[in-house]
Image (cartoon, rainbow, N blue to C red; front, side, top):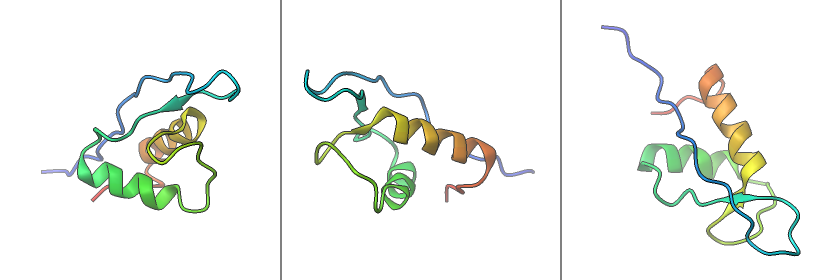
Length: 73
């Protein structure tokens, strides 16, 4: 049986604060394996908050997972 690559689900983007021009997402409810991969991906990235990440960073993460450039264990 062929092993399938897990896909990072869509997360709802929202404005965290009126003075922050970029939308954010809340990745806290992702499965542990996706959260671990996202945490590793986000090393060195700028984040607006301890919990939330910029939506454009998550969208890039999704594309890299879908393309197989990031492998989810």
